[in-house]
Amino acid sequence: MKRILLFFTLVLFLDFCSIAQWTKKADFIGSSNRSMAVGFSIRGKGYIGTGSERYSCGMPIPCETDYKDFWEFNPTNNSWTKKADFGGDARIQAVGFSIGDKGYIGTGGRTDFKTDFWEYDSANNIWTRKSDFPGLARWGAVGFSIGNKGYIGTGENGTTRFQDFWEYDPTTDKWTQKANFPGTVRGGAVCFSIGNKGYIGLGWSEGYIKNDFWEYDPVNDSWRQIADFPSTGRQIANGFSIGLKGYVVGGHDGSYRNDLWEWDSTTNTWSQKQNFGGSGRMSAVGFLIGSNGYFGTGTDGIYKNDFWEYNSGTTSNSLSFENVDFIKIFPNPANNKITIEYPQEFDIEIADLNGRQIGYYQQNKTNLIIDLNGYPNGVYFLKIITDHKICVEKIIKQ
Image (cartoon, rainbow, N blue to C red; front, side, top):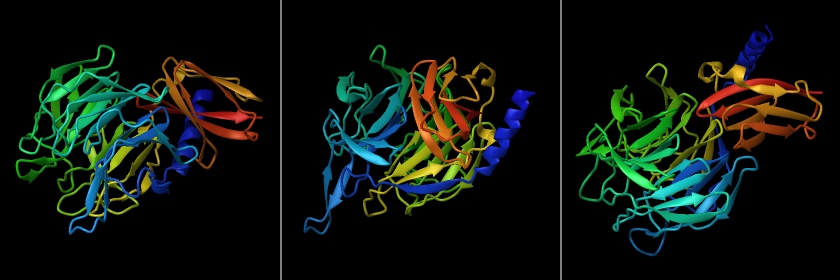
């Protein structure tokens, strides 16, 4: 009975704070503006690097400078910190994703398209060159991770567009070609991953902007088509996932878009959400930190450096309680310290009764001890995030 009462308490709490919203965060400070950069997140921090800055140089067309700098965003204090420069050459329209505590950037270019592939060690702030991407050099490809593997596919090289698809295993530093993306060849597509599946759609293909979307199953090395994107087809949009839902924001369909669309993996349906808070744009960066999406930089003809957070207003329908019996939290109520045990690696967000995040903890083991001495007495909610599953538990500090 105690577990059931807790569940209904959580439903009331989540309904109370379930208003989706965009919030402007600190501007990206790597340059006065930036477009065609790459980004990913690692353990509660976001990272943006490479890309191009546009500036006035007295010419009819503005000049551009390509970059290799690399920056970390900390959502806890809303700040940017410069990290070690990307190990390869400066470039635009590269691919980035993260696996565990490591980030990866590869491909891209401008006219000298690339195949080099680099690993970023966030703990030691160093870059290491890994095995080159074995497909043809390209830009405008897509990349995502599923579990402990990375994937890169599609893209173009100025004359040819691609539909090949490759898997990267960081434990062996080897690439394996997988089943081709079954949609038409394309560049400027969008992607995200949910659980153990990856998703690719939209983009530019043979003179047409596309709105088809496809799901990749790495276990069977197979693809299936899911519901088409319901709005106009577009290219160079951004995608991220929160829980069991995928999101597509921005892009270009002849105009610069600022609409946000959500795909529900449980029902295979799309729905429109609150528009992005900034101007419409393409070639921006998007990624997930905790249970919030982040989106910024890009261009609407003018290069941007603004950066925004999307709180999806997560409701109980998008949370997973299937493993709730495996979570141990003790003592609860607590006076000073509380221990959380869970059979997988996990992250923890602490929220107050108003739904405001007041703490974030990263854990690469199966237990975590949190010191509550700095928190006033009262009721708090622990959001346990692991493997694209979210579970919420109530704790009491007394």
